[in-house]
Image (tube, rainbow over the protein chains, first blue to last red):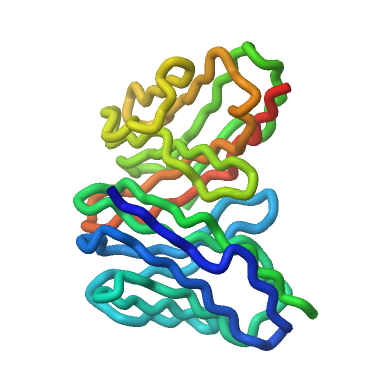
Length: 112
Length: 115
């Protein structure tokens, strides 16, 4: 079955610096990789996703890169702001299903 | 577009009691998920419905947890009897299930505390 590993578990950066969170997956047939942001006490919210037919996708300060050969995908946040502080989860589907396996989460703290 | 609705938002019960959670997915979404999120961890899938049929319940503790989606819309998740380790946030999510990928939209969750 699918296994998703996420690193680091915690990340502190200075405001304005970049943050990178990486996930690796095991199912080579997985074709869709979402990233969720979860603020304290709130629901996970989809912030960006990437499909397996592209290598990179960008949305303002957020980007996701996918390396299918190495089976890893990364979230990049540039010019970080205090409101970026949250827990970020990656996920990958079990191939042929809509069942998602979530990473263990990264707690990002942006220091003002 | 209205989001996924869940109720109650909070519930405190004693161990061995029963509890039920309700979810109303986004209109038209065929796929519905129940997740358990223990503090400090990622969401763990309990059960997945496609319309009113169960697609995956391999991680549902069936001796105490049950879920149904009788008319393919709303869903209820029940725990009977509850244990201390069931304390968690129970998240409902839905997706339209018509594409080769499936965006999931989460509800606000129900925070369960078992004393």
